[in-house]
Amino acid sequence: MTKNPYDVPLSDDEFVEIGELLAQIEEPYESMEADRMDGFLTALVLLPEPVSPSDWMPYVFDEEGRPEAVLKDETEQRRLEDLVYRRYRSIERTLEACEPLDPIIYDVEDERGRPVGGYEAIAALEPFAAGFLEAMNRWPGLRETENELVDSALLGILRHLPEDLAGDMQEVKNELEFESPLENLKQAIEDVAESAAEIAGVTRGFKPRETEKPRAAKRPARPIRGHGGHAGSGGRGPGFRGPRH
Image (cartoon, rainbow, N blue to C red):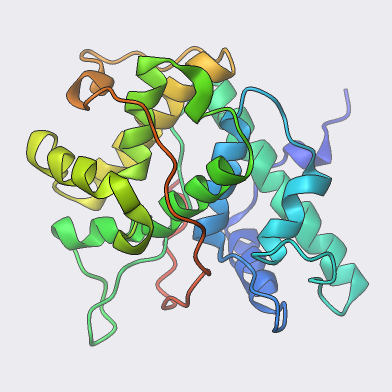
């Protein structure tokens, strides 16, 4: 049987390439960076009803979804679209196989350009959470499940929103920091992966990965209300970490 080329996961070089191509989309358009795109694609995968790539992909290339936001070279544009869709499919296949999500992230750096560690490094997940929220704001399906497990698991992702996007989530974020603190980036990524698996088990019928203690029980179960709009991608340093293999 011939393997679907879109089901081939991105290589390490392709993770770098996708970021470089996205950065080449010129002003006045503002493309997502790869880490924000990963959160956006993850939320799309988790929606109960699929959204056509022709509807969501323009927002990867421009925050307003303008169809003119493309690379000048048509071959490079097709290559970028292929890479983005392959990443979408890879996230979907990972969740379908009940394997832990492995998001693209960029290291948070100190004033000397050195990666920070410990609790401060968790901020590397802010772009992922922002992209996730953007998809939630554009397409219904995740807030509207009326399922406590989904609501609780969404908090496990949205707790990483930057302050300017948190809105009425800020109080919940503060509660989570007290009730369910995370100590470092590795722990935070594992919690995000667990949250995505829990949502996928409800909205997509993918059986979530079993754990000794349900992590959702550590988060307050409450409805997810609407949160602020969507901010621009914003520039970040070159400390690309990418999925861990």
